[in-house]
Length: 254
Image (cartoon, rainbow, N blue to C red):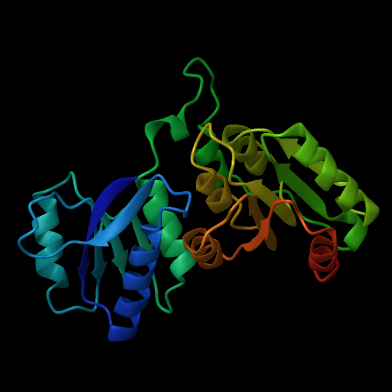
Protein backbone atom coordinates (compact mmCIF):
# COMPACT_ATOMS: atom_id res chain seq x y z
CA UNK A 1 0.00 0.00 0.00
CA UNK A 2 1.51 3.33 -1.10
CA UNK A 3 1.77 6.05 1.56
CA UNK A 4 0.69 9.56 0.53
CA UNK A 5 1.18 12.66 2.69
CA UNK A 6 -1.49 15.36 2.64
CA UNK A 7 -0.81 18.91 3.82
CA UNK A 8 -3.90 20.32 5.52
CA UNK A 9 -4.25 24.08 5.93
CA UNK A 10 -7.04 25.55 8.07
CA UNK A 11 -10.42 23.88 8.79
CA UNK A 12 -12.38 23.65 12.03
CA UNK A 13 -11.66 21.14 14.80
CA UNK A 14 -14.70 19.10 13.73
CA UNK A 15 -13.56 19.04 10.09
CA UNK A 16 -10.03 18.11 11.11
CA UNK A 17 -11.35 15.27 13.23
CA UNK A 18 -13.39 13.91 10.33
CA UNK A 19 -10.43 14.18 7.97
CA UNK A 20 -8.03 12.49 10.41
CA UNK A 21 -10.50 9.64 10.83
CA UNK A 22 -10.55 9.18 7.06
CA UNK A 23 -6.74 9.18 7.01
CA UNK A 24 -6.47 6.65 9.82
CA UNK A 25 -8.95 4.20 8.38
CA UNK A 26 -7.45 4.47 4.89
CA UNK A 27 -4.39 2.77 6.40
CA UNK A 28 -6.30 -0.37 7.39
CA UNK A 29 -4.74 -3.37 5.60
CA UNK A 30 -8.23 -4.77 5.00
CA UNK A 31 -9.50 -1.62 3.28
CA UNK A 32 -8.78 -2.98 -0.19
CA UNK A 33 -7.08 0.29 -1.14
CA UNK A 34 -3.86 0.61 -3.14
CA UNK A 35 -2.74 3.71 -1.23
CA UNK A 36 -3.30 5.34 2.17
CA UNK A 37 -3.36 8.94 3.37
CA UNK A 38 -1.47 10.51 6.25
CA UNK A 39 -1.27 14.14 7.37
CA UNK A 40 1.99 15.90 6.49
CA UNK A 41 3.75 17.51 9.45
CA UNK A 42 6.59 20.01 9.69
CA UNK A 43 9.84 18.08 9.69
CA UNK A 44 8.63 15.26 7.46
CA UNK A 45 11.26 14.44 4.87
CA UNK A 46 8.88 12.73 2.47
CA UNK A 47 7.27 14.90 -0.22
CA UNK A 48 3.75 16.28 -0.01
CA UNK A 49 1.37 14.52 -2.40
CA UNK A 50 -1.54 16.94 -2.18
CA UNK A 51 -2.51 20.11 -0.32
CA UNK A 52 -5.99 20.62 1.07
CA UNK A 53 -6.58 24.31 1.80
CA UNK A 54 -9.43 26.02 3.61
CA UNK A 55 -9.89 29.29 1.69
CA UNK A 56 -11.14 30.97 4.87
CA UNK A 57 -7.83 30.35 6.62
CA UNK A 58 -5.66 33.37 7.34
CA UNK A 59 -2.68 31.69 5.66
CA UNK A 60 -4.61 30.46 2.60
CA UNK A 61 -3.35 33.23 0.28
CA UNK A 62 0.28 32.62 1.24
CA UNK A 63 -0.09 28.87 0.87
CA UNK A 64 -1.64 29.37 -2.56
CA UNK A 65 1.26 31.59 -3.61
CA UNK A 66 3.75 28.97 -2.44
CA UNK A 67 2.02 26.31 -4.53
CA UNK A 68 2.56 28.35 -7.69
CA UNK A 69 6.27 27.65 -7.18
CA UNK A 70 5.58 23.94 -6.65
CA UNK A 71 3.34 22.92 -9.56
CA UNK A 72 3.98 19.25 -8.87
CA UNK A 73 1.85 19.37 -5.70
CA UNK A 74 -1.87 19.02 -6.29
CA UNK A 75 -4.42 21.31 -4.68
CA UNK A 76 -7.95 20.83 -3.39
CA UNK A 77 -9.48 24.16 -2.37
CA UNK A 78 -12.48 24.78 -0.13
CA UNK A 79 -14.02 28.15 -0.86
CA UNK A 80 -16.27 30.11 -3.20
CA UNK A 81 -13.49 31.36 -5.51
CA UNK A 82 -11.72 28.69 -7.57
CA UNK A 83 -7.94 29.15 -7.92
CA UNK A 84 -6.71 28.42 -11.44
CA UNK A 85 -4.35 25.66 -10.27
CA UNK A 86 -6.90 23.77 -8.12
CA UNK A 87 -7.56 20.12 -8.95
CA UNK A 88 -11.00 20.40 -7.38
CA UNK A 89 -12.90 23.11 -5.49
CA UNK A 90 -15.62 22.52 -2.87
CA UNK A 91 -18.01 24.77 -1.01
CA UNK A 92 -19.32 24.28 2.50
CA UNK A 93 -21.04 22.36 3.90
CA UNK A 94 -18.39 19.81 2.95
CA UNK A 95 -19.49 16.46 1.62
CA UNK A 96 -16.60 14.24 2.64
CA UNK A 97 -17.44 11.43 0.18
CA UNK A 98 -16.96 13.91 -2.68
CA UNK A 99 -13.70 15.22 -1.22
CA UNK A 100 -12.36 11.70 -0.72
CA UNK A 101 -13.38 10.73 -4.26
CA UNK A 102 -11.50 13.76 -5.63
CA UNK A 103 -8.39 12.74 -3.70
CA UNK A 104 -8.63 9.17 -4.95
CA UNK A 105 -9.10 10.30 -8.53
CA UNK A 106 -6.05 12.59 -8.30
CA UNK A 107 -3.85 9.68 -7.30
CA UNK A 108 -5.45 7.16 -9.68
CA UNK A 109 -2.81 5.31 -11.71
CA UNK A 110 -2.33 6.39 -15.33
CA UNK A 111 -3.86 3.10 -16.51
CA UNK A 112 -7.21 4.39 -15.24
CA UNK A 113 -7.16 6.86 -18.12
CA UNK A 114 -5.99 4.44 -20.81
CA UNK A 115 -7.81 4.80 -24.12
CA UNK A 116 -7.32 4.20 -27.82
CA UNK A 117 -5.22 7.09 -29.13
CA UNK A 118 -6.50 6.36 -32.63
CA UNK A 119 -10.05 6.94 -31.50
CA UNK A 120 -11.83 10.27 -31.56
CA UNK A 121 -13.57 9.47 -28.28
CA UNK A 122 -12.62 10.91 -24.92
CA UNK A 123 -11.23 8.70 -22.13
CA UNK A 124 -13.95 6.90 -20.22
CA UNK A 125 -13.42 8.95 -17.06
CA UNK A 126 -13.69 12.21 -19.01
CA UNK A 127 -16.82 10.96 -20.75
CA UNK A 128 -18.34 10.19 -17.36
CA UNK A 129 -17.49 13.68 -16.18
CA UNK A 130 -18.76 15.55 -19.22
CA UNK A 131 -21.68 13.45 -20.47
CA UNK A 132 -25.10 13.87 -18.93
CA UNK A 133 -26.59 10.44 -18.08
CA UNK A 134 -29.74 9.42 -19.89
CA UNK A 135 -32.93 10.53 -18.18
CA UNK A 136 -34.12 7.98 -15.64
CA UNK A 137 -37.80 7.20 -15.90
CA UNK A 138 -39.97 6.77 -12.80
CA UNK A 139 -41.43 3.46 -11.75
CA UNK A 140 -39.78 0.50 -10.02
CA UNK A 141 -39.92 -1.73 -13.07
CA UNK A 142 -38.13 0.83 -15.23
CA UNK A 143 -35.14 1.20 -12.94
CA UNK A 144 -31.85 0.37 -14.62
CA UNK A 145 -29.10 -1.51 -12.83
CA UNK A 146 -25.42 -2.18 -13.47
CA UNK A 147 -23.75 -5.29 -12.07
CA UNK A 148 -19.94 -5.15 -12.03
CA UNK A 149 -18.19 -8.36 -11.02
CA UNK A 150 -15.31 -10.30 -12.54
CA UNK A 151 -17.10 -13.62 -11.92
CA UNK A 152 -19.85 -14.59 -14.34
CA UNK A 153 -21.64 -16.75 -11.74
CA UNK A 154 -21.89 -13.80 -9.35
CA UNK A 155 -23.33 -11.59 -12.09
CA UNK A 156 -25.89 -14.24 -13.04
CA UNK A 157 -26.92 -14.61 -9.38
CA UNK A 158 -27.53 -10.89 -8.98
CA UNK A 159 -29.28 -10.70 -12.34
CA UNK A 160 -31.75 -13.38 -11.20
CA UNK A 161 -32.38 -11.60 -7.89
CA UNK A 162 -32.92 -8.23 -9.58
CA UNK A 163 -35.20 -9.75 -12.22
CA UNK A 164 -37.30 -11.47 -9.55
CA UNK A 165 -38.10 -8.00 -8.19
CA UNK A 166 -39.01 -6.64 -11.61
CA UNK A 167 -35.70 -4.91 -12.34
CA UNK A 168 -35.10 -6.16 -15.87
CA UNK A 169 -33.05 -3.33 -17.38
CA UNK A 170 -29.69 -4.79 -16.45
CA UNK A 171 -26.16 -4.26 -17.76
CA UNK A 172 -23.12 -6.30 -16.78
CA UNK A 173 -19.42 -5.48 -16.55
CA UNK A 174 -16.52 -7.82 -15.79
CA UNK A 175 -13.91 -5.14 -15.10
CA UNK A 176 -13.48 -1.62 -13.78
CA UNK A 177 -12.80 -0.33 -17.29
CA UNK A 178 -16.05 -1.83 -18.61
CA UNK A 179 -17.92 -0.39 -15.64
CA UNK A 180 -16.62 3.11 -16.31
CA UNK A 181 -17.50 2.81 -20.00
CA UNK A 182 -21.10 1.86 -19.22
CA UNK A 183 -21.42 4.60 -16.61
CA UNK A 184 -20.37 7.09 -19.28
CA UNK A 185 -23.14 5.86 -21.60
CA UNK A 186 -26.15 5.32 -19.32
CA UNK A 187 -27.77 6.57 -16.16
CA UNK A 188 -28.41 3.97 -13.45
CA UNK A 189 -30.60 3.76 -10.36
CA UNK A 190 -28.56 0.85 -8.95
CA UNK A 191 -24.85 0.15 -9.36
CA UNK A 192 -23.32 -2.93 -7.72
CA UNK A 193 -19.51 -3.05 -7.72
CA UNK A 194 -17.49 -6.02 -6.51
CA UNK A 195 -14.21 -5.06 -4.86
CA UNK A 196 -12.56 -8.21 -6.22
CA UNK A 197 -12.07 -6.73 -9.70
CA UNK A 198 -8.34 -6.33 -10.29
CA UNK A 199 -7.80 -4.59 -13.64
CA UNK A 200 -7.91 -1.22 -11.87
CA UNK A 201 -8.81 0.10 -8.42
CA UNK A 202 -12.53 -0.79 -8.03
CA UNK A 203 -13.09 2.38 -5.99
CA UNK A 204 -12.66 4.29 -9.26
CA UNK A 205 -15.83 2.58 -10.49
CA UNK A 206 -17.59 3.42 -7.23
CA UNK A 207 -16.61 7.08 -7.56
CA UNK A 208 -17.72 7.18 -11.21
CA UNK A 209 -21.16 5.89 -10.14
CA UNK A 210 -21.76 8.84 -7.80
CA UNK A 211 -25.06 9.78 -9.47
CA UNK A 212 -26.74 6.43 -8.79
CA UNK A 213 -29.32 6.58 -5.94
CA UNK A 214 -28.22 3.16 -4.69
CA UNK A 215 -24.60 2.00 -4.82
CA UNK A 216 -23.66 -1.41 -3.47
CA UNK A 217 -20.16 -2.78 -2.92
CA UNK A 218 -19.63 -6.50 -2.49
CA UNK A 219 -16.63 -8.57 -1.49
CA UNK A 220 -15.27 -11.30 0.72
CA UNK A 221 -13.85 -10.83 4.23
CA UNK A 222 -14.66 -7.12 4.24
CA UNK A 223 -12.87 -5.37 7.07
CA UNK A 224 -13.63 -2.24 9.10
CA UNK A 225 -11.51 0.00 6.89
CA UNK A 226 -13.36 -1.08 3.75
CA UNK A 227 -16.71 -0.60 5.45
CA UNK A 228 -15.75 2.92 6.50
CA UNK A 229 -14.53 3.77 2.99
CA UNK A 230 -17.84 2.50 1.60
CA UNK A 231 -19.76 4.61 4.11
CA UNK A 232 -17.79 7.71 3.16
CA UNK A 233 -18.65 7.03 -0.48
CA UNK A 234 -22.33 6.62 0.45
CA UNK A 235 -22.41 2.91 -0.40
CA UNK A 236 -24.11 -0.11 1.13
CA UNK A 237 -21.82 -3.06 1.90
CA UNK A 238 -22.90 -6.65 1.20
CA UNK A 239 -20.43 -9.35 2.11
CA UNK A 240 -20.21 -12.54 0.07
CA UNK A 241 -21.86 -14.97 0.12
CA UNK A 242 -24.72 -12.52 -0.32
CA UNK A 243 -27.70 -12.71 2.01
CA UNK A 244 -30.73 -12.92 -0.36
CA UNK A 245 -33.14 -11.59 2.28
CA UNK A 246 -30.98 -8.53 2.99
CA UNK A 247 -30.52 -7.91 -0.72
CA UNK A 248 -34.26 -8.12 -1.41
CA UNK A 249 -35.10 -5.71 1.43
CA UNK A 250 -32.47 -3.31 0.17
CA UNK A 251 -33.89 -3.25 -3.35
CA UNK A 252 -37.50 -3.05 -2.22
CA UNK A 253 -36.70 -0.01 -0.07
CA UNK A 254 -35.19 1.90 -2.98
